[in-house]
Length: 192
Image 1: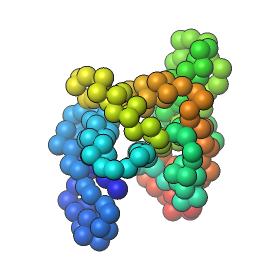
Image 2: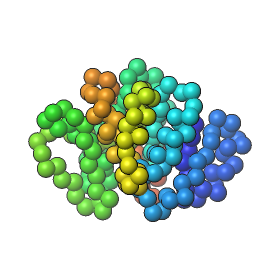
Image 3: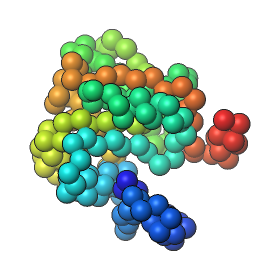
Image 4: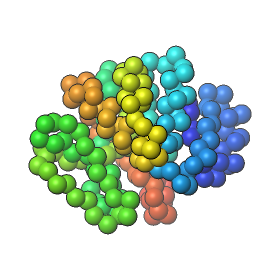
């Protein structure tokens, strides 16, 4: 298990000793680059392992263990969604365009979401993904330029799922799910 850390990284140091299977990777650019660089660092390490599949979950999420096991045990790659309302100030939304390809939208300013094309369906992203084809993941990884990795992790995610096609991945709805961005979100997690 690789955990990419940056902010408050010192608080995670003891976990490697406590959990043998856990390895920390430091992102020195956590405050200046987007989440894409953390994914870049994690994928680099994952490609060095003998693992056939890669599961990627953003670190500020709460979801239950049963849902996590459903993602891990799926036969195909996985895109997750949740039942929460799609709100511009909190959500990463995904939609399927008229070609049936997956697209992600979000607003780092937390003001508004705008889709400028017709679409078939829209969901609130669960922000957990499984990449079951490691070779395709490596190919997509190698085609993303250095500047793109400084942006969002959704660049890789979207390109991977558009490359494999809709019949090669499963859409899984997560039950109790919280994107922990605020103290209120953290308090909601305590209820679960």
